[in-house]
Image 1 (cartoon, rainbow, N blue to C red):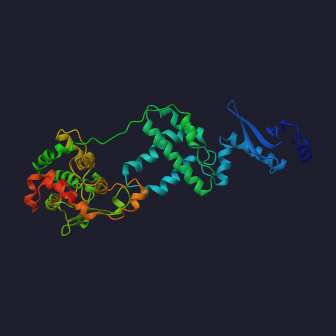
Image 2: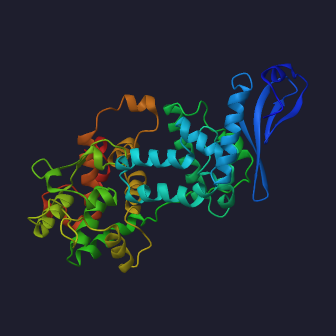
Image 3: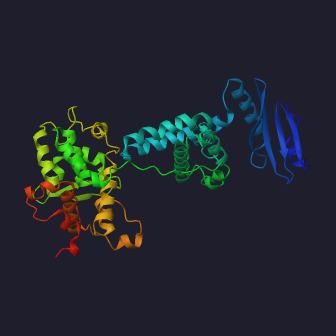
Length: 403
């Protein structure tokens, strides 16, 4: 039997710690609040486990909880974690796995999908995986990312963002009330020098010569890279292009929303040169696949490395994605086309929300003239072959400046 009675618990008012026996204590704070604590010891390590407020938890219940906690510690269990499981509140690890399971199908980028969980398994779970999602705080996040904050800043930033996403999910589920105080946590970490990372681009003046090089060989990879350059699209968009997206009659390529980074359908006017490339690709068409640029594996698109290797073999300091920058630089420096037309051609979102509201149209016909000019610039010797009587210089002037 313990030393206390229910009457004794009510009578004690002086701040301090009072033992009932078997590790159970009544703790009275300086302000008079009363709570139960069970002190346990295992393998030389002592730990205090909160059992609840004395206003809500009776002496009898506190004794039962203390006995249960001692038994759990004895068999190697964590009483706090076990109580959390009984209450249905997940640990950070359990919450993260739930968030990953719910969202992975919506992430288009396979690399991002794989890395999202791997980074947490490597840097967060070993340190904070067992912390209740309700108890997770800024110092927990700091503990996880501090070791890599300086030597792996980009990874640290992603781990921080992913932990924040999990806690936001927990707020929505009702497991916690407040978001993480990340701003305060950031100030507790040393400053890092951020450096923008850009895809290496080929100067636009060298693009026509590179396209001549691509035409000197015959392969599906070279055709795909040529189409990527002429349409200013991303590697994944060109490699997964399917024949049902191509409209030769109206010279349009419609990429569905699910394949676009921004999640919106993108219609690309095809220049005469781009149409010519797509028609050449028909020579590689396979009955088993709708892919315009099929890979060697049946029904699979070309790999991104195929296009990268072509650039390396040509010994140019550029990557496929960089040709979008080549296109954008050419528009800005060599033409009088409006910048928003170029941004829409690249499927970028207009940053100014007010301006974007007035530009809900897709500027298709203006973009058609722009892409025709880009095609003529890239392949000037093929302009007349494709039935276009305008010169590259005339086209580059833009629609408002042609006489």
